Image 1: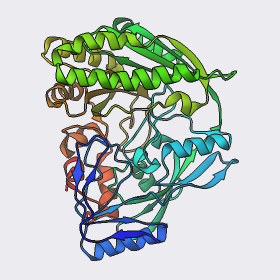
Image 2: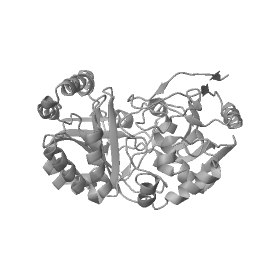
Image 3: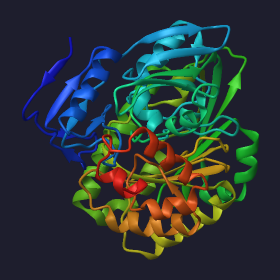
Image 4: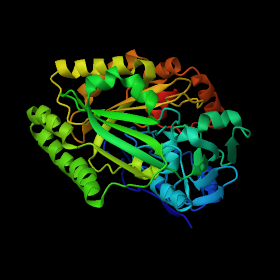
Length: 439
């Protein structure tokens, strides 16, 4: 049975603590049938509804004052088709559970983001991605999905079945219905060798095209107030497995990257003038290392220090100019930025609202420590990103609206047409969707 809480159900908060909502009621359906019935009931009651995952979005994409749908009972693998190279998984399954379950079956996603706390439906609906020369976001690996629409009906979508909905719903920001299952392309598990090393920012920018072309997965972190970066190159390997040693993994990934970094940020928040010095120390804290392991142990890492984030996709050809302008802006300002800037890439894909839709893209993510004023930094950064026709991540802080998106997404009208068809009464609407998609 589902647990339906009527009346006041308390306050919902996202992971970063910058978004809150007070839904009228919460439901936790245990089956697709229960969810369909709950959607029909909410419509009869005249209530809006939103599904929420783990709250890892920094926007109010999942906020509602109506019915909050929690998918934590819709979890687990439904089917593995080894011949087709696919796995079908319930929408509420956390990525970390999917990754571990696939590994036990000798399978893996081709690419993934750098955290795996999110549900599969939440991660894909907002366009979560890692970095890749040839392989795209998690949503780009979707081969089919099941969607409960505003009238409670269940649609299955793929390139062959409801293809126009499939093109929109892989990254649908919750606007088209509630995803109940996703079929991903998977492949036999493989090994990646990670090579992490510091590199001067100027060298990374000068050699960026080569670093991108020579590596299957290249990313780097630039530390504002310094000329330093940490780079990471992940490439497929014949082995053998050589994971990070237990102590070194704890020391670098937990103690330095989370514990010491948290303490440094607390000092920086209390004494902003100390941040440039802290940044110089932080940028040199991690030494070079090389290790070989299965994909999710290389792609993902724990993120325990809470922050607020803005991320934009710019055309890959515009990345170097964008970074140079961002550095010049920080250098001439009085801003004090204690978090590194993260840079990744993705190839063009065919998903209507994907940040990489129709163009090879580079991602620039700016962060601020939780409860630190971020508006001045993000506003100045956003001015640079939008000058390069940047597309903001759907789950991260931005100020863009439907008029802007209609200009940077050539197929924007296709998405809104699908939405008009599936949810004419905006049962899945909220303030955020009204801003980014129009009314």
